[in-house]
Amino acid sequence: HYSPNDLAVSVATSSPESPIGNADLATFTQLKLGLPLTILEPHQLKLIPSTRGTARRIGKHGTALASAPLTNNINTDRHDTILHGPLQAMLSFTKIQYKIEDKDSFAEYNTTRQNPREYCRPDITLKGYKGNTITYADLKIMAPGTKMFTTNTIEGTTLAARQRLVDADYKRKVAKADEILGNNHMSQQLDQAGRVLGIVIDCRGNISDDLADLIKVCADSAAEKHWERMGMRCKNHAKSTFQRLFTSMIGLTTARASDTWYHRSLDWALTYRKDRQSSTSSAALRRTRERLRRQRQAYNDAFFFGRRIRSGPHRAR
Image (tube, rainbow, N blue to C red; front, side, top):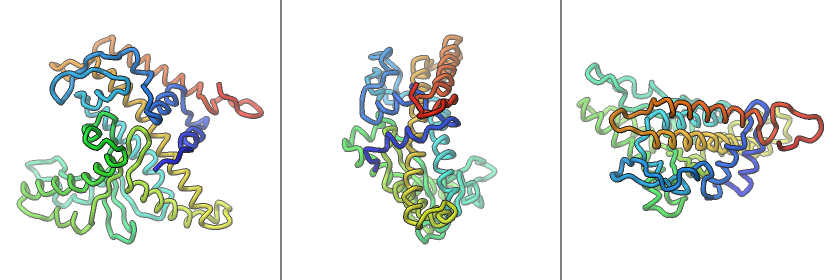
């Protein structure tokens, strides 16, 4: 769903307040074009643990990292960066009523005293989306080594398959919760809302049909709300502007989140200890601090639009 110009659009959204560094740009470009990742070159063919059984070797594209026994916060941070960043910002421009990480939709029977953990918390709850009273949506990010890529060789087919699984996963989850609670209240509420939207993104910047539709609806709503204040001649001009803006926001944030995910996953996999489930060695901490220092430096010396803006045309440094 991305056009060939999306890479340029994403890079062009860099600014003094939110620059994209050389390291991020290199990784994003390599991911987008399907090229070997430079950050993995020093670790080629090293063995790392796998949740699928035998250890796997790090390849040129890092596919083995998708099955590494990562800590939950590595995947969660990537997920939340996109959910609370561009997706929430996009919805805030519109007239659509929404909630991010909706704790209230199933609150009436979501938890019990015996089991205080929530059974179901939608990533996004929309009111009035495409005429529906309530619509639930869930965000999924797919890495290149995700198991589904081995069964669906065409990237678009894989994203479509993952999109369909979102609704099936929700139905299975609430059915299990209803069985535990001894009623069918959650299943009834989910059925009334209709199909759960699968907001699926991969690290190459490709998106699912549900996300493409959501971007279009949000662009139309934002244009209707803001086109006069923007000084546009008509709503359609504003709509195309918002559609490009939302697409580039999601693309740029996905690029950065994917770059960070690769660095953190690589560090974790190389220092993984089964007996401790984590690595707190001084060497690992030094590597993490040094990587973060390099990232901050890369942002300050951004490839486009550095913080020290010179007079005249901006030049890459």
